[in-house]
Image 1 (cartoon, rainbow, N blue to C red):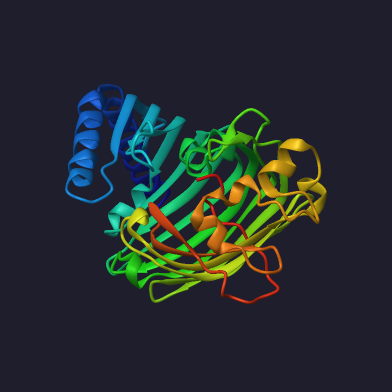
Image 2: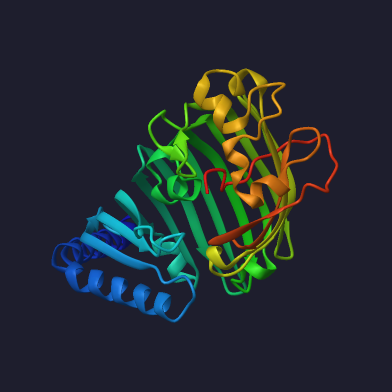
Length: 336
């Protein structure tokens, strides 16, 4: 019996060694340059056939241990948010992904990934089974000021760190049928640097927002936003609504109501803030309200109320001053 076990043990050991050597050999000799070209060309072809028109660039693709890959110099170019503005580019320092071999043996795909970019990290897992996809993402300390599309959407620089979790289940792999939760928080959020001009009028002194929280739950493809709020030193914000999720995130449809109010302490801070938002108690129209859309959005109690419609990639901000609510919120396009 002992001799038989020794024989079996040797055979298992030989097989394990052969399999390990095979993996190492494949890793060393695999044509990663060709794989990179195929991945990039496939992604870009899909984008050209969609409405998002994004273009992927990767400087280098290499192995990461035995069953993973590492991409460096990853850039995703997107059209400008407004005509006349430069294209938007998302830059990632490093992207690592690893496939579970055991999941492949049973016909599933289980990929874990880690992204280093924007001075923070994004980690997660993507699982694809026969009838569903599972997506889990955790964001840790992402510098929102380095995300070009956000700064372009606002029209002025911003700062803050993004944290949070995304946990979604997509039946048949379709976001339009998805369920799950999204919980995000931007800590120490501030907009403006005293140099960039808001709406091309005056330099916007730094406006402290504080912690901006976003909580939502998805059911059958509808992401219901239960909390969009911040109560900072200089501004108060809040909002609610829902997002109809689509397979391409930028194509998701928005139906949100948001409001915000600039506090008196900031409005009376200096001559620039008085000119932009109006000095407390003054009847002189502020420069911020020279935009007819902004002027129509102002409520009698000093809030700016908007309905946010359209697609996530190209949101539209419509005046909603008729909405009466004690809540206060700010749209993403504050500086547009």
